[in-house]
Image 1 (spheres, rainbow, N blue to C red):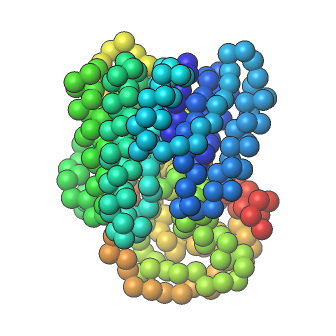
Image 2: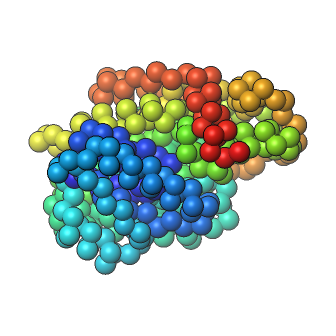
Length: 328
C-alpha cells in the first residue's frame, strides 16, 4: 500500500512513517516544516525516516518527503496525481490549545480548510481510506468519566478543540457522500521520543534537568491520560486495517492509556527518572485547559483489538533516556 502521511516530519508523523515502512508500505510524506517549534528537529526526524527506509530497502518499499502545506490545493493535486496514494493518514494540523486561543484564524485555515482540501483531493482521485488525527480535547470539561466516543462533544473550550470536532464532522460528510472509509482517532496526550518541545513532559524534563523553575498552573491536581507513542502506533495501524475493507466504514476511536496521572505525579515521575528535584513555580489556572482527560477504550479494544502495554513510569524512562541522549 502507498500511504500519504501529512505532518510526516513531526513527532507522531515520523514514527508513523517508520512503522509504515517497516510493515512494507511505501510512504509519501508531506510537511511544511513551520516554526511552531525548531524545524531542525523535524529535519532530524526525516533523517531517521530515511535511515529506516534504507534499512527496509526493497523495490516495493520507498519514502518520499515533500515540503509543502495542506492549504496549497494545487500542490495536493500534484501529489495525488503523481504519487497515487492508496490511503491517507492525516496528522498535519496546527496543534496546541493555548496558541489556538491567541490565533483562531490560523487554526481555522489549517485544521479546517486544509482538511477540506485533502478530502476534496481524495474525492477527486477516488482514494477511499483515511485516518484522521482528532484529539481528546473535543471532550472539553465533560463531567462524565471516562470519556467515551458516544459522549456529547458539542461544548469545546478552545478553538483547537473546535477545529478537531469540525474535522470529524467533515470526514463523516465525505464518508456519507463519497464512500470514503474513515477512522477518526482521538489521541490522549501522546508522549515519547521526539515529542514536541512545547508539550509538558518535554518542557518539564528540560527545566528540571537545568534546575530551572517548572510552571505549575493551578494546584497540580489536573489529570491527563498519557499515552506512549508505541501504543498510539499500534492503535493507528489496527485502525488502518479496520478501514482497509470493502465494507463501508466510519468510526471514532479513543486511543489512550485509560489511566489518569495528575500533574503533580507527572512531575514526580520525571524527577525520579532524572534523579533531580523540580523547582516549582505556581501560577493561576489557564482558562482553555481541561481539568481531566480519561479515555474509555472499550470500543477500541472491541473493534480494533487495541491494547496499550506501556505504563507511565516505563514510558517516562524511555523518554528521559532519549532526551538525555539527544537534547542535553
